[in-house]
Amino acid sequence: MPDFFQIILDQLVSGITAGRPDNLLIVSLGLIATFYLIYRLGGRAWAFLYFATIPFLNWSFGVIETWCFVTPASGEPGRVAFDACLAGPMGLFEKGISFHPLAMVTGFVFVLRDFVQRRMGQRVLMVMALGVAWAFYYAWPVIAIASGLAFAISELADWAIYTFTKYRLSTRILVSSAVASPVDTTVFLFGADLAVQMQLGEPAGTMLHTANWIAFVIGKMVGALFVSRAMRKREDAGLVDPQAV
Image 1 (cartoon, rainbow, N blue to C red):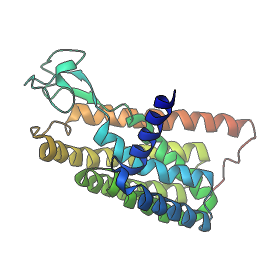
Image 2: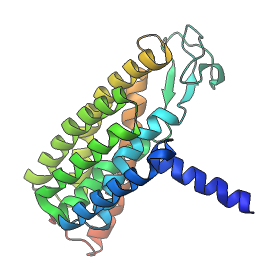
Image 3: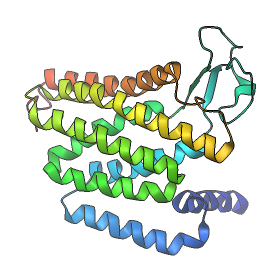
Image 4: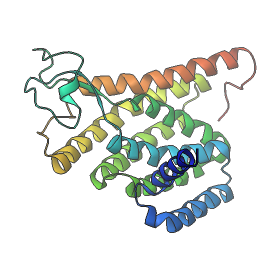
């Protein structure tokens, strides 16, 4: 049993420090300071979760293996486990089809930001900036740059739609996610493609191609659609103000 708890502790430390346990003290102090700053800005549970999700997703895309559904025409094994695909090469999908299991979670990031803005107003942009800054510690640099740029573009688009439209809350969540997800996916997959070329020697187009782009966008929108529908039911039941900002 002690060994079990030690394994859990080691995994926790590894997650907090991105596999660099020697940095535990300074990383812990940095995170405490960041959470305190968010608290002073008026952020509470939703803001803390939103902040933590950004570097977590950056870290996960560099560590957790991508699922492969269709083998590329080249048949070459590599970063996306091409040697363990569900289906063999298909002429229609020359580059294959792969999907990251956490792509659906990214749809919830936009939703989280909407909830944070309801409490913090425009200060949500500062929470977003803090999350992107920490992403540079937890992810490959090229992934962090691409993801940081993607978040900056897509989240600002999401923020603008959420701020300036008069749609009901559930509709704003879905529309802002529909606009932001394609932008985020394009920029991120471009960076991910560069990352696997530089870090793992993969050929160009391993991650950035039409089939992958569609799969990632659909995955993100599923998450947003789920929350939007749940929010619509709460609005119809009178539990949530549809015009809440």
